[in-house]
Image (tube, rainbow, N blue to C red; front, side, top):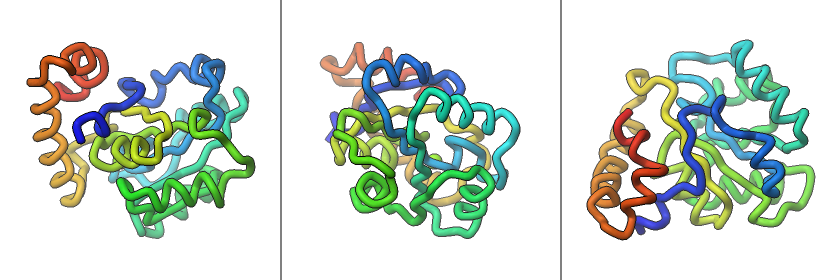
Length: 185
Ligand SMILES: [Mg+2]
């Protein structure tokens, strides 16, 4: 179980992701979470900086798909404004929504090692990605203070597992490298 919560990569924010490096390592499709990954729960629309990020993602040559657990209209509205395909109510950490993005929404067929999911929650984005055996990228939440109750509850569970990972000798290096900063944020 603990192993399935450990991301392939960790970065402070999406703007710290070395996109070209990931592309060169073979990644071609990026699935992204919305809430607290691209924008906070309070925001509804992409800002200038986010559009710049997307431009860079596309310039390098990635395919980019939004995969959100939210059922709300704001996901569709955001995706439209951001001009990116989306799967909403994706039920992460279940495989369903992620598989739909990979098999039905993506324009091309990709091998699993060409796909990465990025998000701010270990219990949904990372666990879901690892279950699908794709690469996973954990980033720190944009603004924790805006989180809704479901997410707050997920955070409590996340913290429980973070503490367990922290205590395990065999995960010491992994914790320090990929989770410490996230944990202490
Ligand atoms: Mg999120």
